Image (cartoon, rainbow, N blue to C red; front, side, top):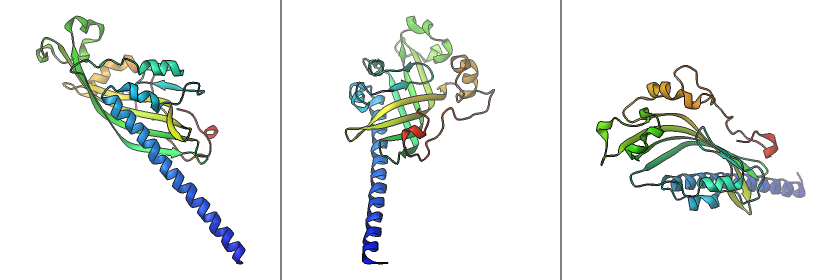
Length: 231
């Protein structure tokens, strides 16, 4: 091998190493964006969540929160994050885990998939209880200060697409798919049997009457976003 060939080979290795390092850095940056989202979501700081999204005018922005309600433009997504109720006594603690993140070879987009286990709870004025099924609440002998108590375990999947804009990773597509939940005083099997009517059309929601399967494909290595299915 001539010195010219050796230099060319070394330069190629440096370029490949730089690309690999950039993708590793981008993977960490993507994970940080979603982690920041979840920490802010847990304390109802939605005004700080808004800048984590792609900028207004970005084509294709959409979000799905739990198994109902799809928001298909920037304004509706921002409206969801405006004035989210956070009364005294309400607790949201969603803990995400098992991240599976793939950054595209071209470095322009990324896909991420997470599992979440958490709790949701709060107090309701008895006058408002009739708007929701009775089985969502704890028994009346568990009332606190005359208010009905709702305390739920909840398990979800999060599937997100990210877009790099102006050198920063932003949330582009967002899907939260609730797998199952259960009140504190009940197990998830009997509760799912009662609550299945709410989620009959979602394949991945747990039911005692069907086998589990993924509702969305897991991220896998890809070159450009045109090669994959969007979340």
